Length: 78
Image (cartoon, rainbow, N blue to C red; front, side, top):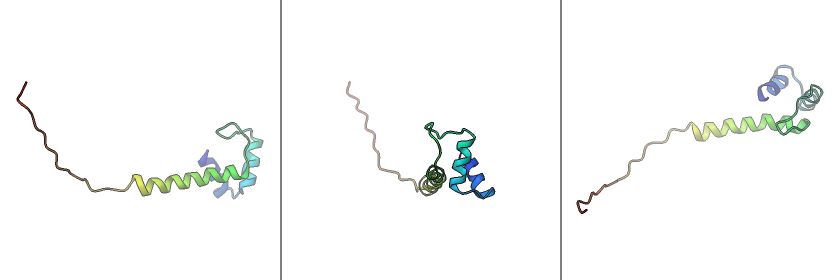
């Protein structure tokens, strides 16, 4: 859904309200089965941007390995 909304917004040049009207006319529901509003269209685009930023800042960061001092002791008593 994100790619479709992004296409309508960036390539077709439609605003959030026009996109929501088109989605409702075509009978496309939100992921919760509701009708689209301009704010819900904006939220789809915003959430994707926030997700991409979070991934780039947290998941893709290379952390140096930390090696601790671990000792294993075996007892010969049975």
